[in-house]
Structures are given as structure tokens and as C-alpha cells.
Image 1 (cartoon, rainbow, N blue to C red):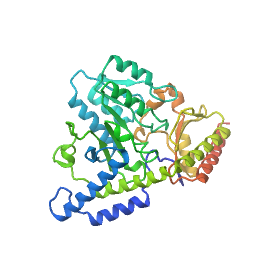
Image 2 (cartoon, rainbow, N blue to C red):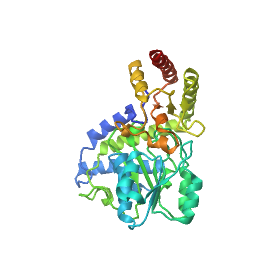
Image 3 (cartoon, one colour):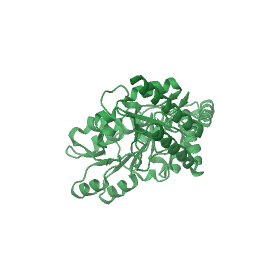
Image 4 (cartoon, one colour):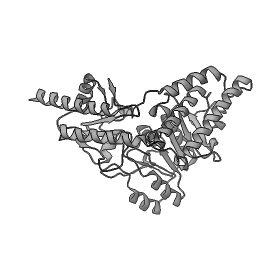
Amino acid sequence: MIYFDYNATAPVIREARQAWLEATEKTGGNPSSMHQFGARAARAMTEAREKLAALIGCHPLDVIWTSGATEANNTVLHHFAHALDAKSEVWISAIEHPCVMESSQHYFGRRARIIPVTREGVIDLDWLTLELADTRPGLVSVMAANNETGVIQPWREAMAICRQYEVPFFCDAVQWIGKLPARGLGECDFLTGAAHKFGGPRGIGFLKVPHRSQFAPLLLGGKQEGGRRAGTENVSTIVAMVTALEIREKQIARNEHILHGVWRDNFERQLLHAVPATTIVGANQPRLWNTVSALMPEGDRKHQWVVKLDKAGFAVSTGSACTTGKEEPSHVLAAMGFKAAQAVRAVRFSGGWETSEPDWDELAKGVAKVHTELHHSKG
């Protein structure tokens, strides 16, 4: 079985597993405890916080540990729901992850305004510039790279525009971190990431906030994380996450991701040759090197492809894992202007650092075989 669902979750890498095991054995105390066991755990956590801050480029005290990106993203919207007045708006891009979309609707309702995107799945910077010149929202939220399409967003440009108008900027960088350089992301006012997307363990993520500002925590009950997130920190998973990210950053520094992108591009050419009626979503825009979102031929249902490719030995998906089980078409594709009948044909192929060139080639052959089977059965 060849795994092509890395955007949903990545397997834990050997270095992260080893770091977790060592931290579990050596730092078993509660980092809030005053005895030596607690002090040892606190030192390990402080070191991990400093390493992460150095990688993204922020102050160590800006970093809050969370259970993952869903908690971190909800925490940001919860904070602004308490910090802003009753009339303030938040603006979020039309292609944000469901945990951002739904939490913004929960806390702000009609005051959650949507930033439109182009047909290629990129936020409309002209719209943002014009609207900010006239209105000041309490927050602007733009993800770094989309989880369904892989389309990279102009988060730096959006952040610069927000700086000009003194509007806080929030970036969900879950799909970016561990695939592209993390340095510079720390300039965002609010930033979120999750370990399991780049080879760290599940159940651990982080939130970057300005440490000198007032903050309304989502979780109450203790003074951990400077009073910004209650709950005993999971030191071993924190250490494992930072270890995994350090490994990925070294691979990125060696430009290994560029070669992986070449393999992905070759797969797309083979896919379009074998299944000519396929449309690659966001094909003309910079995308994550590991991601292909394809609208399969008319009449083909995405679930058919997922099931048949699974039987053929390939794990792929229909899009965001967090929308599995929902009947509605992808809100991302809808925002890009695709009709529901097109969106139901979307299949996502997402490789990872461990995916090889032969893996991509085998996937292309598998897709060609399934295409033949599907259309023979219809005949």
C-alpha cells in the first residue's frame, strides 16, 4: 500500500519517535512542579520552545503549546470574540480550514466576512486593499497554503497590507510548516501549526501570539503557558514535534523539496495523458510541492476513485479529512467558482517527504488502470 494522503496526516518519522521515547524516559515529571523531576521537564519544554521560536522567527514567550491546530485556531477566534467590541468584524478567506470557518461563524455570525478568491484559488489582494482602505476589521485571517488544493497564498503580502492599516493578521500555516521554510512566519501576529502534518506525533500543535498583549484563553483551570492555556503540557510530544520540524527544515535547506516537486509535476503530466478529461485545480499557481487536486472525468464520482485506488494499493482522499462524512461539496472549490457537479469529482493526491519518484510513477499507472476499469464498466 502506497500512502498519498499526507495532507491529512503524515506518518511519525523515526527521529520524532526516538525523541518522544527519550523525553518520556527522562522528563516524566510535571513541568509545573517544583521538584527536580518537574524542573527537568520544564527545561526540556523551554528548550523546545526556544528552538521552535528560532525556526519561525519570534520570541520564545510568543509560543503556546496546544493539542493541535483545531484547538489553536479556535483559540484565536475565541480570543477576538472577547477582545473586540460587539460591532467589529473579522475577515477570513473563503478557503480557510473548516475549524477556522466554523469557529468564526460560531463566534461572529454575520460579522464574519469572507475574503474572495480567484478562479485559481488565491485570495483577492486587490479586494483586501480596497476594503481595508474603507473599513477596519478586528482581524484578518489568511492561511499560508490550502489543504485541499495546495495553492500557496500571498500571506506575506496580505500581512503587509494589514500592517499598513494596523489590523491584526492571523495565519493558519498548518500545511506550509514542514514543507516550505518556516522562517518569517513568526512575523504574523497570530500563527498556528500542527506536528502530525510533518512527521511529528498527533495531539500536539502550537499557537503564536504576541506575548506582551492581553489574551483571552480558551481553556481555563491553571496558569500553564503564562496563563494563556490551562492544562499540563505534554513534554514528550512537544520535544518530538520540534525534532521532526528540525529534520524537515534541514531537508528544505538542502532543497530536497524542489526534486519532490519535479516528481509531482511528472505525475501530473502522466495523469493528464492517461485521463485527458482531468482538470488540475490551481494548475497555474504556485502550489505545495506534494499536492495535486484533480477533477476527474465527468460522470466519475470521487468516492469511486478513492475506493478503487485503495483496492489497487493507493491511499488517496477526496479533500480535507475534516469534511469527511459531509454531503456538501467542498467550500474551497465552491469559492473558486466550481459548480457542485464538478466538486464531487475532486480527488486529492498528497505525497510526503518519504514518497519516492517510483511511488509517483506507480500512482500514475494505478490511476490509468482504474480509469480503464471505470469506463469499461460503464460501457
